[in-house]
Image (tube, rainbow, N blue to C red; front, top):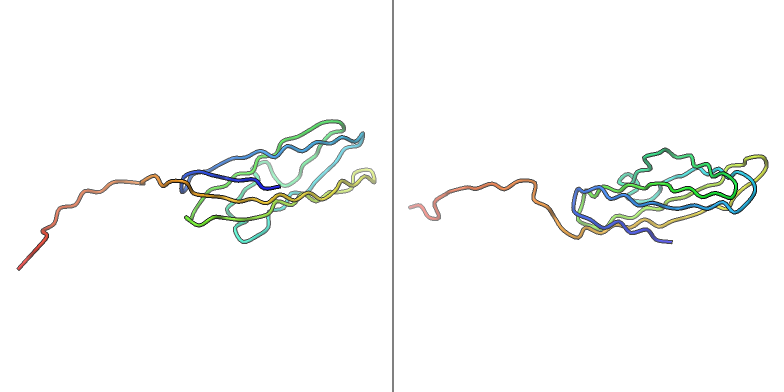
Length: 116
């Protein structure tokens, strides 16, 4: 599964990942961001995700672009044991693309085009 973050340079883009728990037991995951550009991605609500039985939960993933090149990372959701129950490890590929650049400021300068 790939989650794409598209926006302007230096803009923050937020995506949601919806996790479902079809079992009758509580599931707990430890979320980890790994990869070349993992520092540009953020899990604002922390790294622990608890999903009640027969429920679903959305987690936010934020990305702030610092460079024009595409950023890549992987979101790993590693199951923790709750009452002897383990869920499967989930992986999501995170990719970004800068679509446009907003100017930070506009400067006007005057100078002679030619001097003797």
